[in-house]
Figure 1 (cartoon, rainbow, N blue to C red):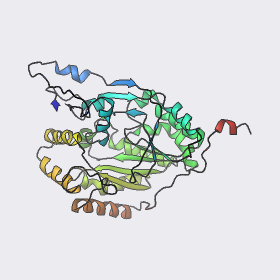
Figure 2 (figure 1 turned 180 degrees about the vertical axis):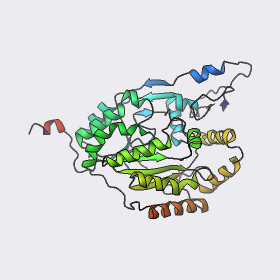
Figure 3 (figure 1 turned 60 degrees about the vertical axis):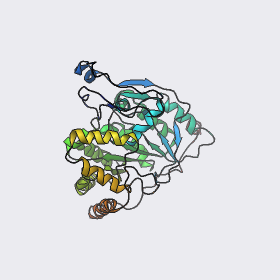
Figure 4 (figure 1 turned 180 degrees about the horizontal axis):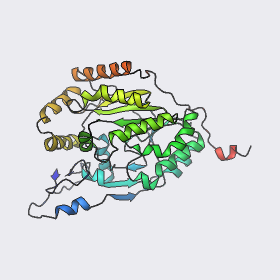
Length: 354
């Protein structure tokens, strides 16, 4: 693990550069080599185009709720310190620390790859999750519009889609989402951690502000697009006391359902999060880490299907009870929204000829 001796770059979740577990060599900073602090702060995010053979990934996890996932980007500039997807960056030759936030892999062919897959004989029109790994509305999407092009392909084929994001940029595409929602083809989960802006900026520095997220929930809901409010992750000792307030505000904004996950810190993510606590909340560090371990049987990460997302034990029970009370008090729907897969069209262009 290498800690940058300079100040943490502005707007980043971490300044750590962890060693990649799959690399044979590791690197250490030379303490006698002092660079200008401003150099790292001014260094922009690097976007690298990649061209995979396919865009859909099969999901075998029974507690996800979708069989297929799609990610137009790898790495995420949002910089969420707790993000479970950080470790996947190692498979691309980068590290889960600062590399995850600054080395963004872009898939410009994602829309055409999706169209090709949807028109293949083997595709049955199952619902797809966008995104299952990194945020499809991270900042660069404003310029590249890959996610918007993906939505256009889905609308063209009446392909059902479940979306999750932490960015209010999703409202840009209300025109497409509205038409898909009329056919029950889409739902949007807005992921929120805290209404405390100081905490939100430290946890997830380049996501949308809390008020912007709630405004997005309101705009989507008014457009007839079903919105699920996802409190993710709940971190005991940090934001767990906000469950009722966030649930109340989400319902007032028009969200129809309320779900959550609890924090889980796998592998190197634990090192990043502990360093983050030491830097920003040293007085809470031991208490928070002990409660996180209380969620996962003495570990910081649960791997068992059915419990890994919510945890187990006393801390988990308390959180579960609060969420249940919030759903009941604010009249959230207890039914899972089922999207329509019966309208899927493999060859929409040909059908228009008749």
